[in-house]
Length: 563
Image (cartoon, rainbow, N blue to C red):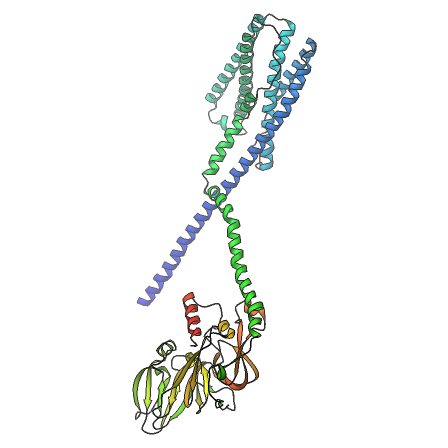
């Protein structure tokens, strides 16, 4: 019952946490989507408004040049020509001021192109009105000078015009207030008749305000000219007034930019795009640099190493005389899941406790802490510590097997008197020495060999007979003659007799080496002798893909010391 409740509780808790996680993900996604849409909309709006402002300024410069040229042509023209042009300007102004902007409340909603066209059209209309208004004011002054009108009469007439327009403006404002009072809600609902009336009144208000301002400005100009009926100064466009015409558009751009600055996507967008090239370059270098290094090792260093003469271990390690050959078995596979040995009277077996399966009760056992006290580091690094030393007063049958690894097999290799074997202690689990002899082990450094440096095996450990080595190997150990040349993976090599010629050869194919499926170099053995290797090596199984940098460093150090 307790197990059932625990399972139900875990089930409910797991799915409750999933439910909460889904809620968080959906809320975060909705927030990010809203921020992104706001960023896109604001960015598009700023771009559209900037384009409209730029287009309006360019169009205003063009209109200003044309107006200046027209007015210059009218400086010496007749009064009728000035009257005709002034009437034409006033007609154009009336049409421009009467134009109604197209409604943006349409279905479907207008896209960016429609909004851009609308903003550009509105900016152009305002610029045209301002240029024509300045031209009309100048022509009015020129007309007054040409007609020789009494300045005071003109001043009275302009004052009356100002009063008339101002009165119409006040009537318009009163009508708007009355409409809002009668229809406070309907006046703001798009498509309603009251809203249409309010929109029309608001547009008429803008027209009246502009007309009122112009009437007042004309009145001021005429008042300044009162008593002076001379021709006005040459015509020049008021740049400040034209810039003021686009001021609402510039204010809208500034407000949109401020809103855009508050968006976190906009804040991070520029720094991210700024470092993207550097990040891409770093990623590209991280991809190409290992490829370049591997290509250099494969196509330059490895062929260079193959040209050097092989390393003759018996000669280079100064072993006197021709070493005794090690007898070859009928089958190359010399290992098994278990091995049964006969320990002769007076012999001593040093064995790793994990590989001792059974032994007679009459045998004497004690602990030997190191395989060889003259090589403490090698013994420790190879795991040959806390060994079981077995001796017997009579012949004893001992069974050996790997108890901690079902894939590990055990092989027994006997080195006769005078035989020598270069062996890596990592594959050793025990040995048998005869009588009171001690294991004959020697180490030799080869710092002048390029083969040794490329493989990082600078030290060779040699076992000399008579001795019996107990060797382990994953899924089996094989012993084969070197003959006319034998190439095997470095990770699989356990040892070879000193009579063979040792060298390195480049991996046959580049792509497996590039992908880390093969090592750069393989061991090559030639001549008279044998080589010993395990079938499925675990050590260095995936070159270049160690579990961690520390493990890779440890493997490299142990390889340098021949372990």
